[in-house]
Length: 216
Image (cartoon, rainbow, N blue to C red; front, side, top):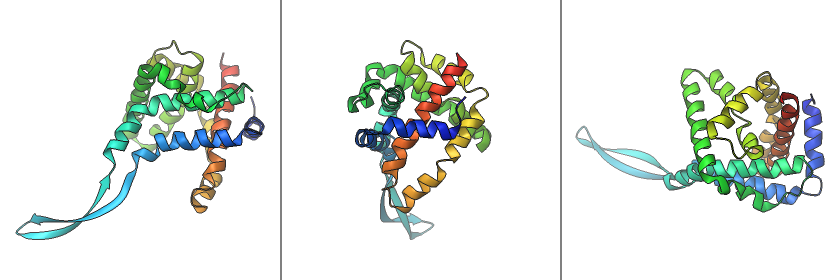
């Protein structure tokens, strides 16, 4: 088994000479999924008649249409993100178009995304720690689906659970090792994310390759 330091070193090797496309793929994937689920940040003042008087309230408009788009395409985009960085980790020719390869299996990836969201949500209803464990448990599902596109969504989830048995703590500490980089991204008003997002994605792809080689 490779150490986290070795996995991160491999990620940098994979990205050598390919940073620009990796940055574009990573940022676009984030924009199409995570960024669209946020609020617009636009606040409006409304006066609501309550208990015989008008009460001033501040309303934050949520971008519900964008959130719906992110929900619909989230699965295929996550599949495509895994596809691109898996190719990098295997020293194969990775291209920008790989980000959209998940739409070839749109229904499967859409359903996979729904199952993952539901399962993680249900675990978070118990406590925060079970929810985090669930995220770790299902984290390899899109990578597995890339290698086995004939699988059903629940089969990919089940294989991810089996693959991550005994490796969840390792992945958790790998996550923690990136906290400083993500904080730097915040402190630099997002510029740092241009470096850390592809670096992180490439490292997780190498983590999958390492765990897979020991799991099967």
